[in-house]
Amino acid sequence: MASRRYHLTTFGCQMNEHDSERMQGMLESLGYQEAPSRGEADLILFNTCSIRERADERFIAHLREAAAIKRRAPGTVIGVGGCWAQSVKEQVFQRFPSVDVAFGPGQVHKLAEFLTSDSLTAQGYFEFESFTGDLPAKRARAFQGWLQISVGCNCVCSYCIVPSTRGRELSRDPDVLVAEVERLAADGVSEVTLLGQNVNSYGRDLARERRIPFSELLRRVDGVDGIRRIRYTSPHPKDMRSDLLQAHAELPALCEHIHLPLQSGSNAVLRQMRRTYTRERYLDRVAEIREQVPDCAITTDLIVGFPGETERDFEQTLELAEQVGYDGAFTFIYSPRRGTEAATLAGQVEHEVKVERLERLVAVIQRRAAERAQRFVGRTLEVLVEGPSRTDPSKLRGRTRHNKVVNFHGIGQAGSYVQVDITSASSQTLTGEMSILACAGR
Ligand code: 5AD
Ligand code: SF4
Image (cartoon, rainbow, N blue to C red; front, side, top):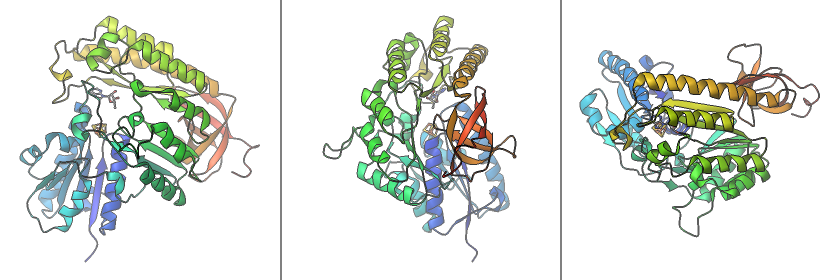
C-alpha cells in the first residue's frame, strides 16, 4: 500500500510553528509523507490560533474547504489541533461534523494514538499531558531550530486567550533542553530560538534542585559548540531583570535583539490590561537595555482600542512609541476574545476609531523604525543567509543579529554566515553588498 499522506496548515505564532514541526516529525515517524496539496492528502491537519477574531475566521474558511474535499473523498481524515481547538473543545464536533480528531497544544501525541487505533468515532483530547518539544521534529530550515523551554502562561492579561488555551506555565528540565540543543547543533543547527509564552519566568515551577533562571539557561545554551546565534521570545517586561541584560552583554551567541511587548503606553489602560507594570517602569527597562546593550534592537507588540481607551490614553501610546524609537513593532486592533475579562468590560471602542488609531500608530512606528535603521548604513554586519530575496531573485536574503532582514548582492548557501556592507535602510529591511574583505573563511 502506498504510504499515507498528510497536509498541514499552520496559523499563529512561533510556538505553533514549533508545534507543527513536531507534528510533522511524529507523522513521518508513523510513515506518513507530506502531500503537496490538501486535495491529495489522506489526513488534512490544521494547527490553529485564536489570538484574535481574524485568526478564527481565516481558519474556518480553510476548514470549510477541507470539508468539501472530504465530501468528495469520504475516507479523508480531518484533524484540528492548537489553540482554537482547545478554546472550543468538544463543541468543535457539533459545529463542524467533518472533523474527526481535535486536540489542544499539550495533546499532539494523541494524534498518533488516534491514527494508529481502529477508532471510527470522532475524538477530542484537551488535557495537558506532555510537551510537544519531546516529540521528534521535522525542521523547516536545516540551520535553524526552535527550543520549547516552557508551555503555558501564569499571567492574567485581561485581553488574552492564551492562558486558557495553553494552561498553567510548565518548564522543561534544563538538562533536557541543553541535550536537545547539543543534538540540534550536531545536526547542523547554528541558530536556536528559545520559545515560551513568558520566557523570563522560565524555571519557577521546577523543583528547587532543578531550577535555574532564564539567564543561566541562556548561558548553558551559549556554551554548546556550533551555536552561533541565540534568540528568544517573548519576555514579559515585569520579569525583565538585570541578569538577563548581563547575559546579553556577555554571551557571544546571544543576539542584540529584545522583543519587549508594551501593549499600551497609558497607565490606566495597562492597569485594565493587568500588565502589572507602568509606562515609567517600562521606560526604565528600556533605558537599562540601552545602557547595558547599547546597539540592541528593541521591538514590541501594541494593541489599540482596548476597552475604555480614550484619545488621551492612545496619545500616550503614540508618545511612548516616539520616545522609545522601536526597531519594529507588531500593531494590533483589540479583538474581544471569548472567556476573557476584557471582553466583558464597558467602553468597547468603535471599529472606525480603532482603525484610525492603528493607522496613526503604524505611521509613528514606521517613521521611527526607519530612523533607527539608519544607524546600520555604512556598517558591515554578519548576515545569516536564508535563501533568495523574495522581491529580487538576483539577490540573497538573510538576517542580521538584530533580526533585520537584509537583501543583498552576493553568493552564499542558505545557512552560511556572510559579511554584508549595508548601503541603505528602510523601516523594514536593509540593503547591501556582500563585503569583499570579509568573504574568506566564512
Ligand atoms: N486583541 C488584540 N491583540 C491581542 N494580542 C493578544 N490578545 C489580543 C487581543 N485580544 C496581541 C498582544 C500580544 C500579541 C501576541 O497579540 O499584543 O503580545
Ligand atoms: Fe500562539 Fe496565542 Fe495563537 Fe495560541 S492563541 S497559537 S499561543 S498566538
